[in-house]
Amino acid sequence: MNPKNTVSFDDTAVAFSSKSDTELYKMYLLFKSMNSNLFVKVGGSLLNTAINLHLPVKFIVKPTIFSHFCGGETIKESERAIQELGSYHIGTILDYSVEGEGNEKSFDATRDELLRTVEKARGNKHIPFSVFKVTGLVAIKLLEKVQAKQPLTPDEQAAFNRGRDRVQAICQRCYEAGVRVFVDAEESWIQDTIDNLTYEMMALYNREKAIVYNTYQLYRHDRLEVLKRDVQQAEQVGYYIGGKLVRGAYMEKERKRAREAGYTSPINPSKSASDNLFDEALRFCINHLDRISICAGTHNEASSYLLMQLMQEHHIAPQDERIFFAQLYGMSDNLSYNLANAGYNVAKYVPYGPVEAVMPYLLRRANENTAIAGQSSREFTLIKNEMDRRKNKKRGITDNVFSHF
Image 1 (cartoon, helix red, strand yellow):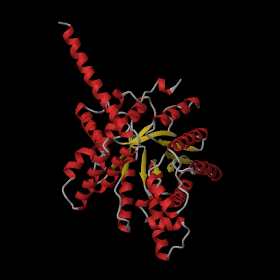
Image 2 (tube, helix red, strand yellow):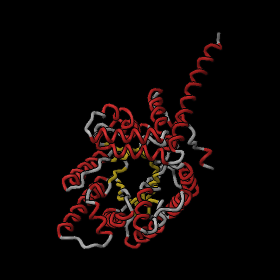
Image 3 (cartoon, helix red, strand yellow):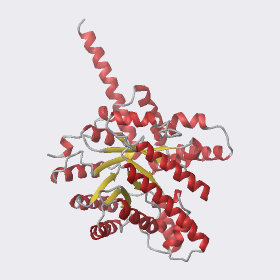
Image 4 (cartoon, rainbow, N blue to C red):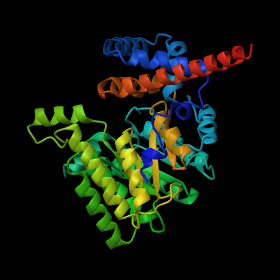
């Protein structure tokens, strides 16, 4: 049976079932604003200036863009989002989205906060994964030097070792708590170092099943081959692979750096090439599900339908714990809620942190929505359709009442 016959991503009644009329109207206003490139550009610049000048903008930001895309300022404040998503059988991935100061004190503080997210997830059916960025735990310049095979000074080597220890502390706690953890992908010039740290953690903690997940950015033309190599290595060494598949988040930065430095860009030449590579990676993973567990981190409807179809063809139950779908909190509810309603494993990335510290993340979200062709307009159209559906339903009820007179 074609998955499109059983699950419709156009079903707005399911997609926005958690939203009251007032909440839906707030979403309407937010995405209407984000449909304007000029508004996002000017508004983002003004917000950045206001924050840099320490002006009181929190009272404007927190109830609007922050509350839509973030769970709260703390783990405790995020409890409302965790419970709401959980009531619709959608998991939460608590994403500490504070960009650190890049010193040892901030790295230790980030490690400690990430350990708190693991403890929150321990035994909690609503929080299936933790997540972290390696750059929140070790200096970028060290990751870059290691990847470039440049010698480290004794102090640099000690600092890198402390970063590795922070990574291991989180992975070990996840292993002990039975909580899966994503190691997020980052820029290509530090990704090999991140990969190698992740492989080391997999060899330690993925002996029985996938606990540590690496992230594969399929907008890079070499990532499918890397994924295949990683699965082969895991088979040889004797551990399981966790793979979070995404398209990618650093396209403009990657192309700019490659152009300026005079090397071939690692990014696919077109969006269709990235889409094809992502879908090929899904097929490969499903064919090697005995060795790899996956999370399809995607807002792409065609890829989501493809994964559902592959699961059907291979007689894989929707609730098989080796396969998850994931989207960002505040986006693509038409995927998340409809997939969960059909019994698939779904989780939302729920960022949290102090409003001012999370602003860089929020501004990226707004810019990405306007930059991704059709993303904001798709969200906006779905919201308008649901508002119209509710109005028509109320009008129909009213008409039925008067028809009795």
